[in-house]
Length: 500
Image (tube, rainbow, N blue to C red; front, top):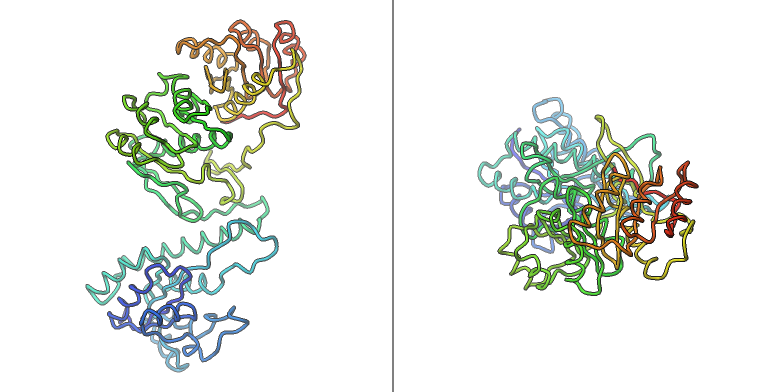
């Protein structure tokens, strides 16, 4: 490996670079720095040489070309164990570069059309070269590695092979993620899907305790903050369901999710009213569930849950009084300030592994296609219309073959994930009755069309006065005729919301 004598430092993210540069100097390592990084280090009183002295050339094209020079890349790629490499370097008057400390320009959040000026060329090129030659050049591509490298230098004056290998793998993962993100921003064709994901969270376990799991994002940043406890694979899925459901509402709303589906949703003018309405829809299923709200979780909400077991709570914020009360509970607490993460970071796609591969689709962002069409019954009152839209928003996030009964901005019974729609209808009615809810005067939503009239007939018997569904069945006329006969108002959305 040889002595470590020279480091090239060129970083966009300057977090911790001053302290790390001092550690390098303390280990007897001279620093070559690019313009902005060099100015930063010199302001901090750290000695470094400008990269133009190493290359013998001033920066070109307004700063576009700084490190793309044989003196730099030959210094990075030269193998100390290869005498011919070292002789050639000496003959050219180039010196060996033993460490490359580099990270990349920040990428934009959104595409810029055909403007690709944001792409970093020199940084990834140097990082990849150092990773390739990790036995002779130590690649350091993130501030999180400054501590381990500095500690090893202080202890041994060297960076051991196992740490070099870990640094090389991390660097290659970062360059791959960077390139994949660039491709997402420029909009690749759909014949290929290239993902670069970095772990942002270690999870307690997967779907079962014997399975390992992690949470990965395109930039390695977690879209929410865990205030208390540690999360599992299932917790993340339920949190996503919570945030997706809450994104449908502008008013104060709460949702209780169990096994990746809502078991209670409510909106209210008061925070605790929304929470109580969601929880009390199906308090048996709510036991051990994940609760999401779109408002600051306050002490009154915490008091409501004082004697109730909740697996996890997600909210945009928690007030201090609520945190003090919840500290005594085992519930995990998650802050999601920005609400539901979009799919934009993954090229606008929702991904799911299946059959040894990955399924990709655009996010289900529509609510109705071309406005509601009323196929039967009287024109709904504003209250009934509001309940129809509310129930439809809930059905969109329940598992396929979803049936939702609702009234006054609260769900009364939810049946979902069943092989037949009529079974989901029966379950929703039974759930409502078991929880003591009166379905008379309620509305019913169905995420897909009715293949037969049986579900509408059951809803009428239970006391529902209106139904919302996509339509599109070969038996639409039969279903609509049944609704007319039963005096049921039927709204058609012309769009379905299956969620498998």
